[in-house]
Amino acid sequence: MRGGGGGGGGIPIFISRRSIPLKFRQLSGGPSLKLKFLLSWSAVSFVLFLLLLPVLFIGAGRWRRPSHLTASPPPPGKGYTILINTWKRNDLLKQSVTHYASCVGVESIRVVWSEHDRPSDSLQDALWQSVQKSSKRCDDIELKFDLHEENSLNNRFKQVEGLKTDAVFSVDDDVLFPCASMELAFSAWQSAPTAMVGFVPRMHWMDKMAGTNKEYYKYGGWWSVWWKGTYSMVLSKATFFHKKYLYMYTNHMPASIRNYVTKYRNCEDIAMSFLVANTTRAPPIWVKGKIFEIGSSGISSLGDHSEKRSHCLNLFANIYGHMPLVATSMKVIDSRHSWLW
Ligand SMILES: *[C@@H]1O[C@H](CO)[C@@H](O)[C@H](O)[C@H]1NC(C)=O
Image (cartoon, rainbow, N blue to C red; front, top):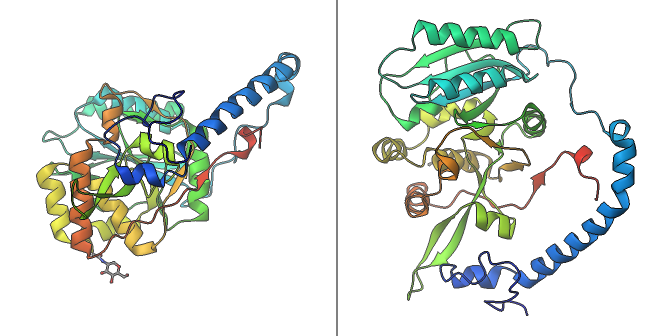
């Protein structure tokens, strides 16, 4: 069955789609293997579920493991800063700020503000009040707006004056991550402070132009990452990284990349992934986390317009003179929540 293109009719995703490049199929190490695995895994879990049902009913409360890694906030400077990228959606901004202020490790919230008009006093007051209400720290969480004159996607990676922490969590205003997921990702970052640590993985696949031998990089969205379990980027709309990369993005990264990002309003996250990978020569880290999309833009907001994204991969690799991205299959999970193995 190995490599049999249209194999295993059980799962309709992917296998029979003509858009999948040949190489992708050949590389996949037997989709049927994964299918078998999925099926047997489902069967096993179903049986286990039946067996465990009584236990779940009786002992649910007592069996639950503690839900927080750290009970008390980290010392000053050792937590992280939320860097929220927002654009004309004050209601979403308010939801985000209110939520993140309730997470234990958050020391500071910086809003990347690229609108022409300054944030209104009433917005600032409202945000202030919700921060103070939801904060669980004794000392206050800092909340600051960083105003930008030019409306460029590069703004999200501009250096921020007076950052209180080394760790920055870069996030958009239309997605929320629960505090438990944030804590897990932050502790992964603490173990690897030079890496990008995030929740939304993406991949650069090698592919061949139709009818030629010319190889190029093809942007792999969520489904290809899910299928193959391999990734080389984590999207910066939900990523921890060290603040030094903000400085490097503006001052060390080739200006042609920043100009491209401004002009085409895309690929700033791919640019950051290249920058970090070229610095560390190591892959990013994917952390399992729950994602709540609160905006209306849906899944597309996670940046999958794959032709344009593929173009960026090839263009940026050209500018660098090589492909800095490194692929991996490692994923961080909270071991308290993985019962089966
Ligand atoms: C990539 O990293 C190398 C080695 O550290 C460095 O010399 C080079 O300037 C970097 N490339 C870019 C485009 O930043």
